[in-house]
Amino acid sequence: MAKKKTAEKSAQELNFEAALEELEEIVQRLESGEGPLDAALKDYARAVELIRRCNQVLSQTERQIEILSGVDAEGNPIVRPAEEGEFALEDAESAESSRRRRPARGES
Image (cartoon, rainbow, N blue to C red; front, top):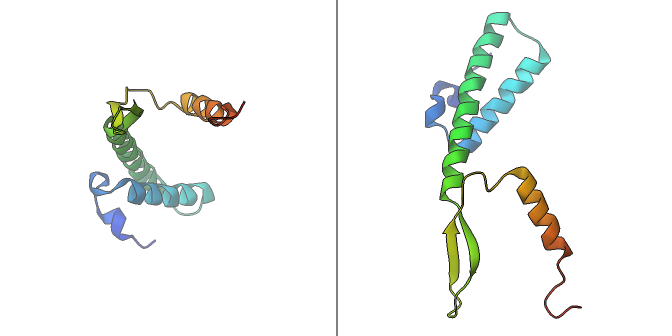
């Protein structure tokens, strides 16, 4: 099994996309059931590192997101920091469905 460049880097050095790509490759190898047990254990340990890295990047990104809360009189956006947990999947789905139900301005 040939190592890729990302496998040589620590998980902390990878960006989200690279960590996720490597994680998906590991999952495919583990799901195939091929290869020796010791290689599967190493893959599993690496997958745990990659999952932690992905979660870390997602948490950092979530803290940086600002929510558009309106527009001031001069047309400038008014933003506020996103609160922790504000981006839960259920909230996003309900917000998306409520946006679809609202009529456009001027419609009755």
